[in-house]
Image (tube, rainbow, N blue to C red):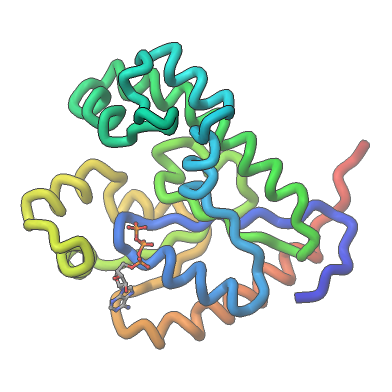
Length: 212
Ligand code: ATP
């Protein structure tokens, strides 16, 4: 991808329900040379030993959410916030601003015309306000359920519970700027990605430099 502009990279946020095909789609963009920023990766980085995120978690939840080696014990933390909205909100109040800040910082170092920021809970977390466009991968709910159960070997009740805890399919479809339909074969994604890629390159060139 040419790297000739002076403007900050256009930020395209990629979202979709669990097992809708975000990773599959992101990999196709990466094959075209588009830089990917994955908020799941950043979410793990902000709680590494020595990071302020981990220090704040210890302050809030105590050191029994740590492993013996000082790393975060994710399952202990998950147990603490599971089914407890207040505790979950406390955790999100620590993590979300750090993830947002680190993600935006990473996007500022991009020299290509645009980057793809993968944010599974885009609308739920309000991250849609921080990107220039939102691209949603959409899969019909019955097919999403089938793929999720197949991939995670989860039972139907558990898979349905996770899907229902996220924004519903229709709301995500109407809130996104662009859609990729992932109801058929993976090959059918390639052309959709190519069309969007051309469009994002054009959009990135059409922007005006921001006023000082
Ligand atoms: P998560 O939300 O868990 O991060 P995701 O949205 O990134 O998932 P993928 O991992 O890309 O989704 O896809 C979920 C599963 O569905 C994977 O096993 C993947 O191989 C499969 N899959 C994706 N697209 C298709 C398709 N078009 N046909 C069949 N299987 C698919």
